[in-house]
Structure formats: structure tokens, C-alpha cells
Length: 297
Ligand code: ADP
Ligand code: ZN
Image (cartoon, rainbow, N blue to C red; front, side, top):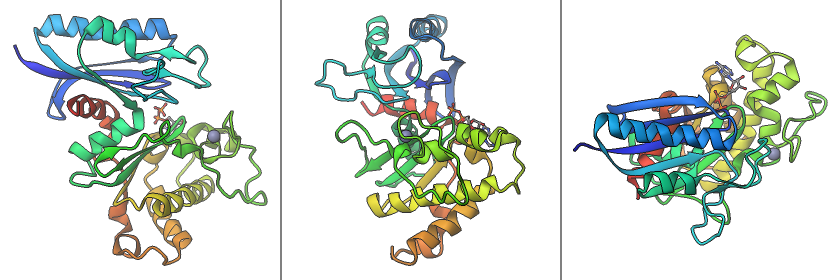
């Protein structure tokens, strides 16, 4: 009986379920919209049960990379819960337990961005690095941190999308999209913030639109803050908005300007294009990260 790992990229927009051992050995994959918790969890369980039967395989373990905020404290009565999300119907939902009861295998649970970071470390742009950061800049903004080769949880888990940034009101008077903080990083620079400010979806704004100068500036402010906070050896920027590849050189230049020669590394002086980079696994970092997370148990 062939052995595999299961992965769930549990996103606020869609769930991606996958059975794989590595990027070259993906057996089954399914994606569906995140509707209400009961229906979404039932679909998830059904996918794995049916695939196990169909292929006559054994799942060694499952990894869940989940949108947050989530409870990662294994000693907490609400371990495995989605907690204070503004997503309707998903507040205080136990995601882990119903899946564990149904599949009865070891399950690793972490944030979507920590899982993606683990995947990038194993197979993507951060191989052989002990300290690096992964961000998604999409419907929301989230960051995962691998520090000393381990995903950082800390008190709860990092919320790097919700730091405060300088907003020059004379250049950008947008109130911000975050329901908790208005003009935090996510509030100013997520896909919905771009749409809210300019009235057009990010993918429909042409490459020379002034939106991108502002976007690169906000991202560079955030990156210079994280470089000073964590001293990462690499920063990976994924998510829908980062498909606008012209952002990368703009972010590189602006981040150098904000750091102003202070952080003494040639990665920052001369090799920015290798330092702040797109995901090596493309749009598969989340789902393959969930597989890598399962393998980390
Ligand atoms: P999610 O964050 O929901 O998992 P994505 O990472 O695809 O999904 O992010 C969706 C956001 O990214 C939307 O706000 C969308 O407008 C934006 N987006 C998607 N594709 C592009 C693109 N090619 N260029 C710029 N923005 C994009
Ligand atoms: Zn916020």
C-alpha cells in the first residue's frame, strides 16, 4: 500500500485539498469555495475519504495551513480553532477536531503563511535557509516567519499584515480596508484596498498606473520594518497582487532607500533581486506547504 501525505490550504476564499509526497508526486487535488464551515469541512473530509478508497493508499499524516487568526497553542481548550476572524460564520470554529475524528491520523496545524513558508523552505525559493519570511499579498496580507528553522508562533502567531505604516494623506487619502485598524498594511495594500482606492480590481490596472508606485511604497515600508525586526536571509512575496511583477524592482529600490545603508549586507546593497523574491513554488506554495507541514510531524 503506497503511503502519502495529505494537505489542506484552508483559505477564506477557497479550500485546496491535496494528496502528495512532493511537488513531483501529486496524486489528487481538489479546490472548492469556502462556504459555511459545516459544508466546507464535510467536503474536505469526503475528498480524503474518497481518495484513500479510490487509490487504496495510506495517509501518514495531514497538514493544515489555515487562514487566521487561529489558536495554535496545543494546551489550549480551543487549539485548532479559527478565532476572531471577521469572515461571517467562521468565528470560533473548531476546524481541527472534526477532521481528526474522521480521518484518525496525526495532524499538524499552522497558519496558511507559515505552511507556505515551510513549503518554500523545503522545495522552493528558501531551500537551505534557517531564517526567512513568506508573505501573501492578496485578499488579505499575512506573513509567516521561519526562525532558526522553525515556524514562529510566539504568543499567538505573527500578524505581519496588520502593522502600522506611514500614510501621507496628501498623496493617499484612502481610509483603509481593515475592519480592525483601517489603514494598517493590509488596510492600505491588499487587493481589496487597491480596488477600494482606485475603483478597479488590481489585475485590471495597467502596469504604469500610479497605483503601483503607492503599492510598492507601502510594501517597501513594511519590508524595511521586517528586515530590521527579524534580519531575514530572504523574503518571499506571493499572493495575487504580486503577480504584477513590475512591483519587484520598485520594492527593491524603495526598500534600499528606506533602510538608507544602515543594514550592512551585500544582499541589501547589491543583491536585492535575490533577496526579495517571488515564490519558487509559484501558486502552489500554500498547498505544498501543507504537505511539508504534514511531513514535519
Ligand atoms: P486569496 O488571497 O483570496 O487566497 P489571491 O492571493 O489570488 O487569493 O488574492 C486575490 C487578490 O489578488 C484580489 O484582490 C485580486 O484583485 C488580486 N489579484 C489577483 N490576480 C492579480 C493580478 N494578476 N494582478 C494584480 N492583482 C491580482
Ligand atoms: Zn489591520
